[in-house]
Image (cartoon, rainbow, N blue to C red):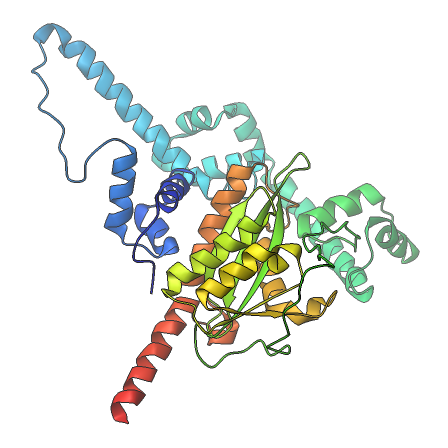
Length: 399
């Protein structure tokens, strides 16, 4: 069910995604993107300037005078390969933050294989600091036990407030119960266990209606289901914060039958070309969208003459929600929220546009190929489409 032809941008992003994940294998990245392992391997070789299946030219014989230097270079290569292996192993435990305690724990876990001295050198820590950390393990364990008991009380207060209390109110509640504690300690424990109070955040508006534009009728009436694939779609735009007050914008086209992301586009603008590109991507995925319904909000991009003409040429019937009603496009809104929640994992945004693009590239393809969807019997959208296609074929043959 994947794409038949991969554009150059897809190949370049696939190679960039593999190179950005030191601990990943070609096989795992290929599985995330839904492509053949050898296909991805050939893209990587092509990016490195090597032809698939090519072999290095024969090297000239080394003279006796150079043998000592060659031996030293080979030794250095082995040392560098060993350091690379150590750093690859360290990538997973350091994924959620390269804290000093993570480095100490990594040395503790791998000292028998690599030795304390070498591990400390590669990870950039002092051996004396590591030995002190290990010596004080019992004291830290006692402190962690005290913090665990405090964390349980904080969770209870936070839960009783329906998740609205932040550090000041929780501190006051604990003090009223007789706990001698300051707000700094409460804040530290709350950060550790991932709790926070309710904060109102400024919304970044992506839907700006054009009062003068013609509106399409609502053809789905909040019925975000479909019996067959390629019959009903929803589309939306969401913003991605990339630091420094800058944003990227993601436009999506989602099939309501299989919840498959049939098409998407990412850019640093919200012009009409963004939603046109997303619809064009969906048309490439399905080969044809003729007769399908495309449901969106009243954003100026979707009511523009250029997008209306694009839908007409593709044979797509436009459908629009009520003005100002997010409930009329909940399927698209829910998808956007899931995407941000699972990629950002509590962060407010991405550090750069490149990081956002790679995260989006990986997650959006993994969503189709591997992520289990509760509405689909915990199958991925592509697996669901394969299963329903097989069932339809069997029923047709039986008839």
